[in-house]
Length: 167
Image 1: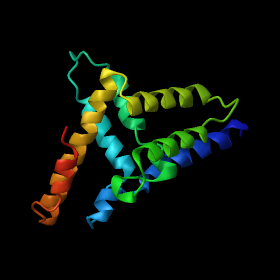
Image 2: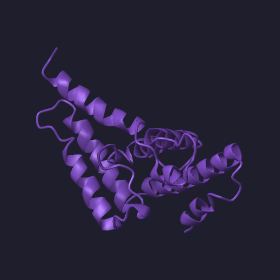
Image 3: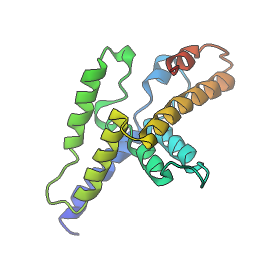
């Protein structure tokens, strides 16, 4: 085994944590079997994957942004306004977590830097693809709320999630 393999396993553990981080809003509303951050990002990526081939957006970039947009939650958790953390503090915490991925001389460093570039593009909404993925993020949350309401017979109980996405 090369010395780089333990670093790769560390990276995979970091990504794997997303499968165990439950989405805070669903937990707060006592949803049975709340989705994980990984499940949320996967469905977002599949929505982007469904873009028609004649779109003016860079489809591959949309998929990649969707797959990485919440990766910091592996470390900081799924922070929502109800957690009492300001948007500015949340942003600082997430950006600090990116530094944990930057392992000098790692063969995966270019990949990690690329992911961080995509994260910042999403955070600051600097491209049409980032803006589209932000809309997909909102849409996925609305769709998930609707699924939970129907599955659990909770009509209208998750309205907060519909209202939260306005704008």
